[in-house]
Each structure stands twice: as C-alpha cells, then as structure tokens.
Image (cartoon, rainbow, N blue to C red; front, side, top):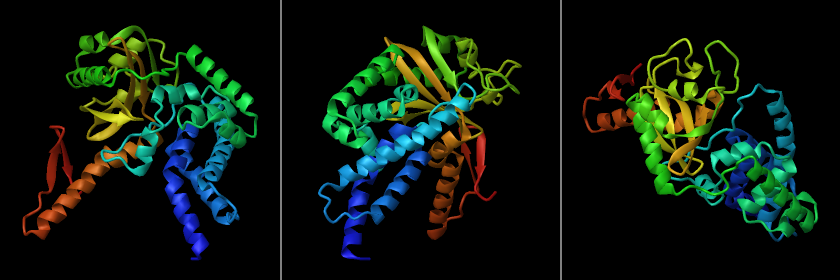
Length: 340
C-alpha cells in the first residue's frame, strides 16, 4: 500500500464513527448506515485527495449526499408499507465502542428519530447536521449546495414541524426517567396490570410495528390499553400478535442513549420498548418487534450472546481441568444447553 493509501485509510478510520452516526441519524437503520459509509469509502479510495485540507469535511459531505439519495428511496418504500413502520433502535453497548461514543455526542431520542421520518430528506439532513453535529449554516450550505440563509430557514421549518408533531426536543431528567422505567420493568415481570396502567398518562401515544391481532395485518393501535395490557397476563384471542407467548423476563437497557426495556420470551429478545416520560408518567411507548430491527440487540444480549458466553466459559473450565457444565438456567425457567 502506498503512503498516500495509508494516509487515506487512517483519515477514513478516524472519521468512520462520525460518519456511521450521521448516516444512522439520517436513515434510521444501522445496516443502511453501514452500506452508505462503505460507499463513501469506495469514493474516498478513488478520489484525488492530494490537495484536500480537511478530509472530515469532504467525508461528511459525501456521506450526507449519499444518505439523502438513499433516504428518498427509503421514504418511498415506507410510504408504500402498511401503518406501523418504526426505525431501527440503536442499542448501546455495555462498553461503548467508537460508534457508540460518537452517537452519544450526537444524541437524538428514538421518539425524535421516529418523527424525523416526517421531514423531507433535505430538511432531515439540515436538522441532523445542525442539532446533532453542531454544524453551522455555512457548513450545511456547502454540503447541501444551498445558501446559509436558506439552510437556516430549512432548520427553522424542520423544528417548527417537529414541535407541532409533539417531538421530544428536550430530554427528560435521566434519574426520573430511570425510576419510571424500572417501575415499568417491575410491573411487566410481576404481571401487574393495574400497576402497569397507572404508569401511563391519560392519553399516551402507543405505537407498534407488529400486528395488533393474531393473523391480522399491521394496523394502528385503536386502544392503547389493549396494546399495553397485552404485554402481561395469559394470551387471549385479542392478544397483540407479538405477545402470543408469555413474556418471561424484562431487562433494562440503553436505546439511543436513553433507558428502555427488552422483553424476553424463552430466553430470546422478543421486543424492545422505547419510552418517553413527562411529569412522572409515560407519555409515549414504541414497541419494536421486527426481526431485522432486533438482530443487533439479539447478537449483543439475546440467546445467541448467552450461548457464546457459555461456550467461552466451558472452554475456560476445560483449560484448567474442570468438567464443563452442559446447561445453565436462565431467567429461572429457561435452560440453555450449550451442547445442543
């Protein structure tokens, strides 16, 4: 590899976390973000960068433009889908990676990510660049090929629309939010329907990407009480389709930098709950059940992650002359056989 190639690789790697974070905020999908950043690398690798003074600015510009193109295509797909589409949650690592650290410096709640879907691609790009990455209007103008004044107006228009839609532009006190999330987790685990409902405001927004009823297509939740209470108790004919099997465990984890809950069925993550709170009550609940959107969470914290850990522990036991255990009880009633 040439010296220039080494410099290119180093410059790209130094900016990669920022580019992933930017593309994810634009597209709402980790996989789509990684695809866009891979395309950016291909363009970067072919570009003549000898006269380039600020590689990160060039890379940010190309990432934004490619993300806008991809977003236009995705929004046409989203429009064609049935109601109930939700963006992919970004589940934070226990030990944050470079990508996680970049995301936390550009935090946007999952609820805000959902509402960003209602913005036009240019509006979303300008809003994300300004609010999450602290780009000034002159820099945004160079990226979008607009005047700084036009970009200021675009961001103002985006903020106005998001406020009108009820976007959570200001975060709730983390300690108060954490207490309410823990109460929700306890109510789910103890199957406490009455206690569960007391945690919600009088008219919360409850959104799910799963069919509301078994054997029915995705529809908007007409009765939030039915959807919420379907998470506890024995399944019935009216049970939310994703809760046809009993939830055996609820675990708190971080979703887009904010505490949420993972629901487990038979040891595997079946749903992620993103929660917005205000005034000591839950005002919005997003229930993510789509398999593709749960894949990353399952790889980190689900059954496959447990099996990998047990295999590692078995190997460690063998290396020091101990007889490895062949199963371990998880969540009290779910045995995991690592020899299966």
